[in-house]
Length: 218
Length: 148
Image (cartoon, rainbow over all chains, first blue to last red; front, top):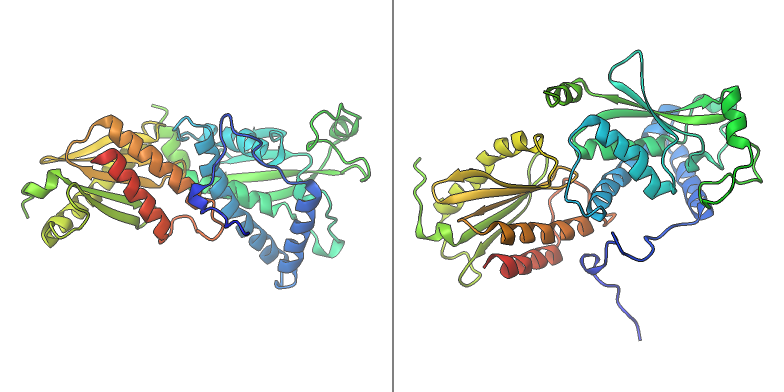
């Protein structure tokens, strides 16, 4: 006797008081993601094209995550301010997708329209090594697509790019010291050599967004 | 063009989901029966016009509050336009003849839940017309429950 799957409109969405909101093993994700990267890699002619394709793959995820998390929060509120949507991305979105908040959210000193979200251990590049002939490629472009999707959906159009930045002395020792591995998904896999770089997502907002946000200050 | 109230206007409800550039979903609800035979073409066009012209007011209001429910944004003759904005800035707009706040809020909340579920479909692209028959049936059922 077969059971037909219920229509998507009849399935529960989770939220406060729901049972586990579902998580996927890192290995399942890493395997699927490596297939995704290889799929695109075989179809493009340049590094930037590959990064663009990974970004657009993540963009749709960002849009959906925005709607889902806002709904699950059950507050019937949306973000209208720049700092708030950035906080939403670096804490709520990161926690929901990766089990922990982003490691830091910073504002650029040189450019008023640039912000940086830092993650020391993004899962997209955990099991990826980039050969030297692919230069500056960052497979974390998928994550910048997710960020861009969230920001764009909420009305804060931005160009988001992923950069691998070499860790400085103090950062290397801080992250590779044996911490209490209490949070399962966020802890370092001890079979891998320690990472030498962190992922920095540079978020550059369109000028009209900053103008609009400035007028809301009054 | 004068917008004269007709007998149908207080029983007619027009619900439109608007994306960034175009309407994504439209439904007319009538108190008696379920057919649209009672509405003339010009009344329908008027109603769409009213909703469309309220979009500017929705845009203005959307940045002044972080509530999703914007209540009534425009009043024309005996009709009012109430709006609900999702986190992704998709606008749910309802043209009605003065329903209670509570019933409208409940209606919007239920449609919001249906919309979020629909968005979870990997084959539904954000900001594109909603063609699912299921969605249409469910929205009409919600309207019957809260708006009649």
